[in-house]
Length: 104
Image (cartoon, rainbow, N blue to C red):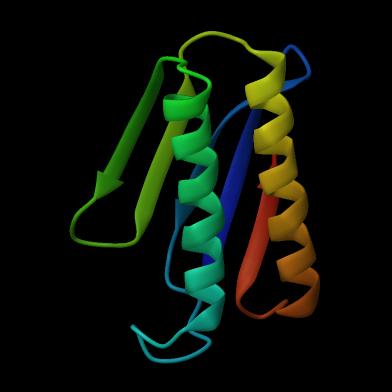
């Protein structure tokens, strides 16, 4: 199962942690994992490259783990991370045995 945990500070989204393979299909042909990865990378790259904000990103090379944190609060980045949480929640509704979203 893929678990996406979102972090809020002062009511604003400021980061997320995504880990685990969904298990929907074999690695390399898993549409649920592909969707999660694509959405997460779009969010990370938009915040870092397009918005030009400082972030902290770590990925575990031995497993499917991504940690993403904003170094400073930004309402646009928070809105984008919120959008990611909403889309992953919709994916969770469609694939409840494969994706779980937690918002702290």
